[in-house]
Length: 440
Image (cartoon, rainbow, N blue to C red; front, side):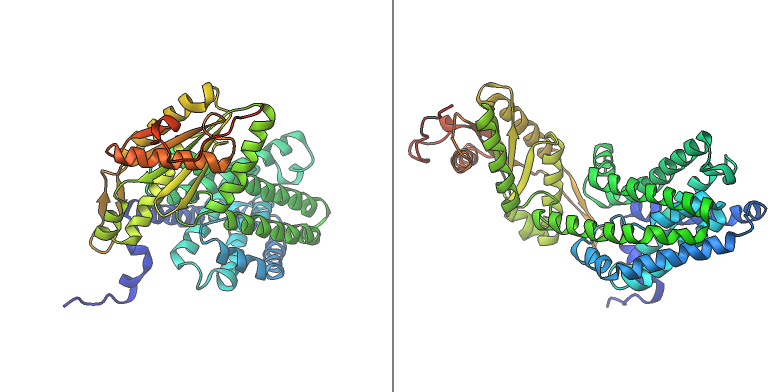
């Protein structure tokens, strides 16, 4: 008979993969140790009004969260993955104005309020604790940099400006690297390329630097004019909260939840735009349709949750083998589609075949390690059949290209799977509509 786990043993943190658990515990212990050792050193460095500054920043963070409470809760409901919560405006201001220990008090106050008002019930406690620990370390790093310059002249000299910029970079580096490390270790692809791809996602990085810059401005106003001037940051921050929510909802509406790729509708809209632009400029493009071989066997043998991990791993493999400007989408089930605009080869065919072969080989090398109650399973020996079409040779619009590529993909299936077939010559006669002449 299986004995149910009780108490601490039931915490969700113990179900995490060992590498993730090791990183979480190490970061949390480092945050506690850094904070404990900084207290004796920082006592002598505290400004005379440090308690007022801490109180004002915590109050500002609380007011900001309360004013945007509905927005923040909606952001968490619409996107369960970690995202920028904009509280770094206040925590970075604390790092610029205060020694590390006092600045960490601001972090604990703001993040404690965030947990009770926004996160509780939505994310497990270990994620909230880890997020707090990463910010404590980021604040400690930024405060150490700003401490290299006399804080009273921090916003009144070029060396002070340089220190603020370096502190901003230190804060962002520590916080983002630690968060992204756990995200990557929790996923199917734990390589450096995946880490760098997630770390440099444009929107999240820009938003982080924007909030840190607002924090620097808030600290400058508070340092020069008084702590009460923190209130001037609240209106633009509330507006930014709502702007970010709109962007997040738009992204959620266009992204496939299991793979992170464009969903079929969003991919189709963008692909039509790309082909229209190529037609106006006389450009070329290639289109690939990919279908996982025997994917039903994966679902039947391991279950649909493991199948979802496999789909995510294949999506990451496809994304890794194409350029940033290429459109990658999931068409449903185990089928993916890629549009390769502005290929230089004749009719886009040679370049598209090269990309398809790279994807095929990369998928064949995938090993998906999925943890479960039995200790985990490894899914490998995956293959993909790929069909392609080129614009304008194989079709004058997206519908024709998809029809040719889909028929070529089934030709690849009939040829034994794990292969690539390209263009009208791979399609049996009569399988697709005749392509009308293309008029330039």
